[in-house]
Amino acid sequence: MMDHEFLLETRAQAQASLPDALRVLLADYPRLGWDSHPEFSGLVSFWLERHLGFRKLLAQLQRDAQERLDRDMSAQSYAHRLSHMGGSLVSGLHGHHQIEDHHYFPRLKALDGRLERGFDILERDHAAMDGMLARFSEAANLVLTTGQDADAREHTARFSQELATFGELLDRHLIDEEEIIVPVILNNGAAGLS
Image 1 (cartoon, one colour):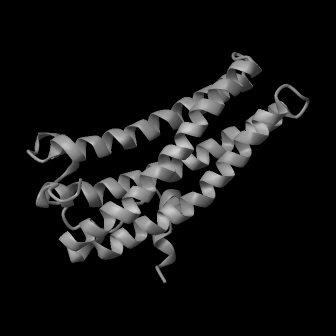
Image 2 (cartoon, rainbow, N blue to C red):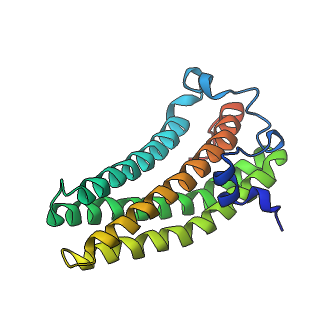
């Protein structure tokens, strides 16, 4: 059983990174130098672009919810955008996590045994995020099915709050994941990972 302090919710609330002992290669490969490293192109660049894409989708969903709450977007436009972007976020994250858990993480763990506990934490994050994605989907579907009825504004406000909470958790996870994975790939190369 992992310590409570390493739960995703606990880390996000404390705005705390994983301990240095779980990010052992980050000192050798600090974030500011990643894009100039010879191993950056390819897998690392692609991985970070996927993470950036998830962040952008979530930020747009948050802006759209606020526009709808401010009545600056019609219910029809909002429903279309929410359905499209919300579906993309949920399916994209599920697929991304499955590939990481079943393909990348086992290979990356084998490259540096000191990081095994860090990868275990990231896998546990993915399991926790499954529940969060289910709540996200339920809240989005409630917004979509109420359309313009009397409860629509209240459902949109709750969904907006769900987005904010989910955004904090997702960002904490992505930062921690990047700070474990990217240095491993920069240190060992991407051969055998693709």
